[in-house]
Length: 224
Image 1 (tube, one colour):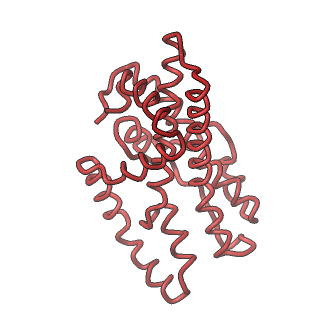
Image 2: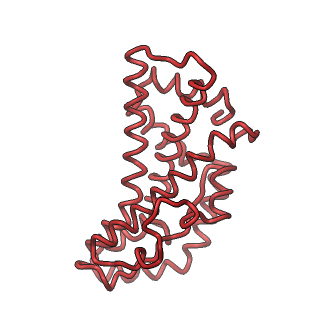
């Protein structure tokens, strides 16, 4: 559990805001490239976080393991190839979160390998923020891949299934809200989503860099 204090919130704030903004921008940009200009006309092709952040979802991500932004408006009827493009658009947010986390994890690995460590308080906060970005973005990627409506994973699975199976799968969307609520409540008590996130973090940072990153995250109450 996070020990919420002003400094930890200050460290988390830019990470949470940027990660959610990047995720939603990626959805809208890929949709635009696939022929759907709905997000563009709605003013969602922007890096201004005010256009993307959902108040409740952002607060949840500040205070706990899961959160969300306002979904980008999408009109699949405008796609060049509806099923393929829906997969591309749905996977875009996951892809950018994964890429950001993996890139920062590799950077941490290189810095530790070169024995470049922070010497100042500001530098240590920077490492804690980098660790938070790695953990959070791997977390967003894993969470959004769950095949539960309205998460991105549900769109990907539906469009990979044969049409008859996809229709039956889509009918389950009416229960998506309840399932999602159950997952959020369960994750607060049983950190079952933490296992793949930690495994991804270790795979890209390596044991030594992961230890350094977690050390600074724990120092500023971002990880325990």
